Length: 306
Length: 306
Image (cartoon, rainbow over all chains, first blue to last red; front, side, top):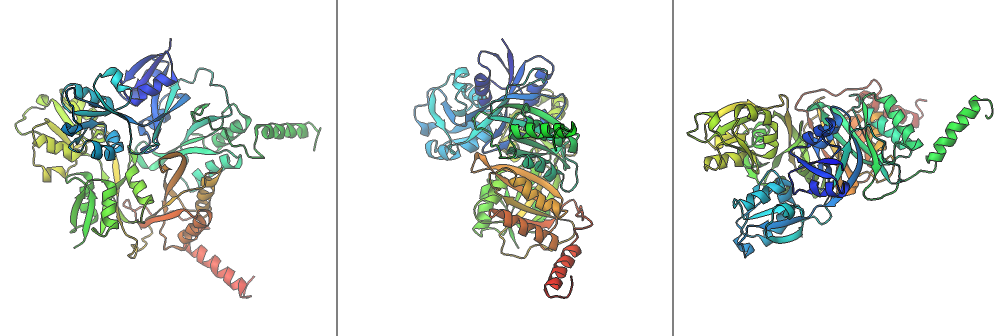
């Protein structure tokens, strides 16, 4: 059985994603995202499950920075979870009007603010370090209600006041399963995502040139994030996700061009997309087109064609 | 005297930035970033001061989204503050070893974690909704210490255990002063920043084309952020900052090209850079070059040159 570290504590959305991505594995909650990566790098776990982006809050900085620095890790799978919350209460509360405090991580509180104004009219929001920490505090009698991931009630048995609570109906979080690069990658499926991080030279046009290498090969971006490198506003790293798999000729050709333009590029993985969306292939840029073109050049070199 | 709304409460880094950006103004703390924008849109304040990016945490999503949606606002000034904290304690504490709880916003706690491990060895971190809320809670006797902005002690008089505390020495936050667009913009200085947001068409190469318009005119990007539009992973808005001022011919030419390629582009302001860095001008792309080239075309059209 494999061992999967996840950004804990127990009872968070990340645990839920880890259960989906690694059925039957032993799950190990780890206190921070950097530590989850660290136990994988040291070989103490086989893989780590971490959040990478939320449709409301955006990218998760600790995940991006943790993948760009230290020993390489690669993403081999992803999960997409709807962000809706359960509201757990202190035992003995019979009327929502009696709830005076509602605790959760500040991001979760922000995502249920309108719901709470209507359904918990007398409750003051209180910030905790995680959604699960709010459940712990409610069990300890510190607060009256906790806004948590649905999985929390497995670990922190408390009365459930409401489920599927969310102000934004379609909010989702994407999670990655990452491991060391010394295993075969998952096979291409036609609906894959490839991720890289590149420290583009700090000169005019450097990013435009990288993106033009992808665009010129008909490769569709799915995400681009700029993060300050070494905490310095002057230098940025670009995290680029695009359709396709490194095993495909068209993607290999593009990655070689990016590497040529930018020595400081790191492969962060190729894996099936959780939404199953198949890659857009431009008429001139299918894998067959790349193979045919390379074969034509070889034939020209052999004097067989012109 | 002008009225400046800022993302409060009193005693945060944003208050400190507002004091720097609007000396002598009446400062009005507002509970959230969207509300700070809203009071300016309604004319209840002349401008709003909000954080826009932090060199460790990255962009501030609420600021970017708030500028992209609803009635336009433009940034007219920026401030860059070093992120170092003061540690305030409950009166009567004489030994740091007696501090059992240290409260702050989770981002602030993350940025002083190593310091706290050494200097507050017995303290458990506790999350609050802002750095100032931690000071309020310490004054109320709820916790033993608060990690706050230096300005907090003006509002919440408490013993100061330490100042200039930060694990990352050069962390900085950039703040904007934004107002309605119905006033003259600040004059160009040669060291300016222009910001736009563009909803690029969801097709291969759309972003590369926009960036190539800037690169082809020798205009250097200073920041690029992708944010999901309407909380949807499938659609992104691109927030692009670059060197220069809309009043310059080279920048006007570039903005017109972006507008031609993308109807859904919004101008978010031109203002002097807080770091005073002057724009890089490529040999073929100075303002004189743009003016000379336009004059040459006019002369050709008049039959005076060829």
